[in-house]
Amino acid sequence: MTAASTPVVAGTRRELHDLLGKRDEGARVGLVPTMGALHAGHAALMADARRRLTPADRLVTSIFVNPLQFAPGEDLDRYPRTFDADLRTCAEQGVDIVFAPSVEEVYPGGDPLVTVSPGRLGDVLEGAVRPTHFRGVLTVVAKLFGLVRPDVAVFGEKDYQQLVLIRRMAIDLCLGVEVVGVPTVREADGLALSSRNAYLDPEARVAAHALSTSLRAAVEDAALGRTRALAAARAVLKECAGVLVDYLEITDPDLGEAPTSGEARVLVAARVGTTRLIDNMPLMLGTEKDPGGS
Image 1 (cartoon, helix red, strand yellow):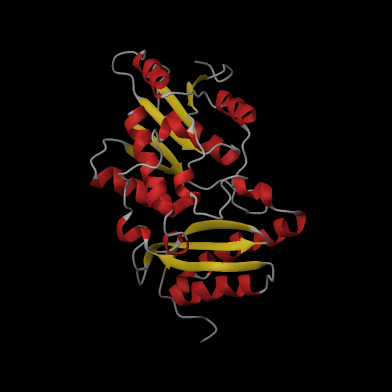
Image 2: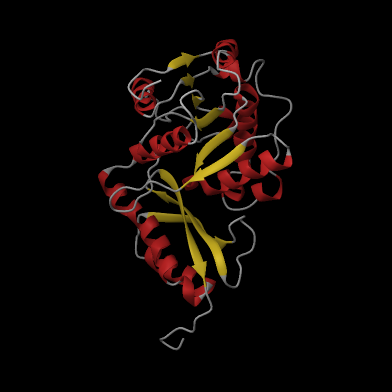
């Protein structure tokens, strides 16, 4: 398939099965799960997946707004839906098949009786604020893995806790899929690309810049240790009245306790106006003495 050709749309499990069944013997399958409202960040995921495949392999992008990961009162009904534009993005990135099922196709008979528990990693950070969220995420991803049977699945590091949990699920449940993370794609001013950015009015868009600025402040002070890095990030967020922080934390790369020194991750979630945004960055913690003496 060429990058300019239109992907085939499968709306049912049977259609998906038939399309994937036509691949050449030995061909691999890549999967990029999305909820649609695609932007340059999603395009980067599809481009990464395409590079990992040969022309004989198949690249599937799923577009499904998963109700199981939205709690009552969240933005399920107003989540952006831009299917025609999404298809154009998929075509540009060389996607072969777009799997765009209905809720009834994914969850025949209503909510599933058996779901995937995120375990203890689902109780912290996003899981503490949205306690049912990751059960819904892992359940739908497990179903997509079962339906598509991908060899490789690509996710964005912007949703870092989600990436860690999906990777852990694939390992712990022996799902036979390589889970790949792709670095966050950002606007010119540093704001992480997100479908929910469409909710931001001009004033909130300016305020949202504080999230990435706070993370960069933590990265810059990381050599002074976790406490100083967090203090630097908090100082940035404190100056922005339009940002209400849910959490700001530094962990190890697997979301455990932050090391005294070495690789770590700084993660933030905040409400900017009526919109909730998340972001994160890798950093390298050190134990240098503060040159200021404090």
